[in-house]
Image (cartoon, rainbow, N blue to C red; front, side):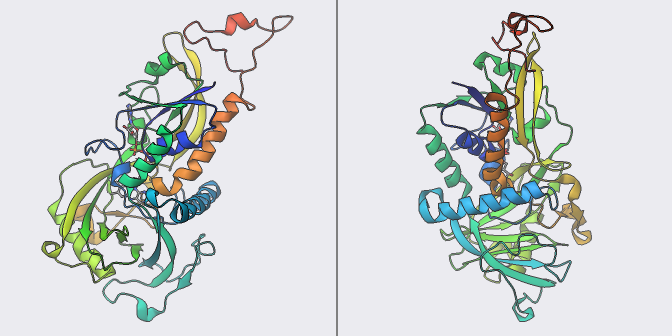
Length: 394
Ligand SMILES: Cc1cc2nc3c(=O)[nH]c(=O)nc-3n(C[C@H](O)[C@H](O)[C@H](O)COP(=O)(O)OP(=O)(O)OC[C@H]3O[C@@H](n4cnc5c(N)ncnc54)[C@H](O)[C@@H]3O)c2cc1C
């Protein structure tokens, strides 16, 4: 059976593994896995996670199609798989930089979409327009466990706990294709060493507030959200600190989050000391200048320079599209409409695309047809590497 080795067990790695054909042998190699103790080394446990309309590249047709597909997928899960934690949730979206929805490509797609009456806008928020529609939320720890349980139920899937400093170290698994879903790790993983990767620090607070019955998001000049998880708790945030990785909870950001969340939903106390706090969260988003990397290439790995197809899928946050709120410079708050963390929102579409890219190497037009011995051709034996028993890819 074809062997596909997926590096990374975040929402991308797990979703990709689930999207691959069932007759493949899938090996998931990762340093961090669902259920592990808290770690800032990966992003997936720390997401909100709500479904926004934004991708990592403004108005990119492929990302738009992925987000639409993902919305349908999560909608189905909300109806058929309560154990996934996915729930439908009304979303209220305020924009404080423009008074129009003309540029929102998803406005005709979201169920129950309507522009709110000006009287419904929160008075202290500088909102210029309010939009409401039905969206989706999930609880990351539960959703990751759900994905993992599906993978454990598959006899063709194996998990290997391993920190990989170079993809060379995976040759012993004899992969036909490697999928690189290492998030921010792609910046230091050899020979990828992607210089465009950049950590984007987030900080949120999980509060107990059962009365909050809908999600609220504000973007434009400022960026803030209140995401109820449907279990009596809500996540309030946020912040996007470009290039920062401090694991410490910043008390000034905490205060500011409560203040801004209260402007969105008055049921959140404006005074941080009045919050019923479940926990503080710090998380590092896998940012990448220019947006997500989703492409295949052939890398030469190992001492024998064996050609190995590698499909990259990482970087869900477009660092170079960030703005800066002048009044929040001390907090280094970076804002951009729709460019928040989108790993959960993109993951189902990314899984489908990666499956196609992998298949190009296994069954498709990049399948390595061995050259036949004869006039003007190269003998098969001369293209086979001992290290891998692999043919050169033509
Ligand atoms: C505060 C916050 C709020 C967010 N809110 C939302 C939201 O509302 N909606 C949304 O869609 N997204 C949100 N996100 C973004 C989302 O969390 C990320 O986009 C997503 O989790 C990234 O998933 P990933 O699988 O690509 O990377 P990760 O989750 O970082 O996983 C990377 C995997 O690769 C492994 N790995 C890395 N390097 C190595 C190595 N060298 N060797 C072995 N293994 C390695 C790690 O151990 C891990 O298993 C938020 C993020 C944060 C921090």
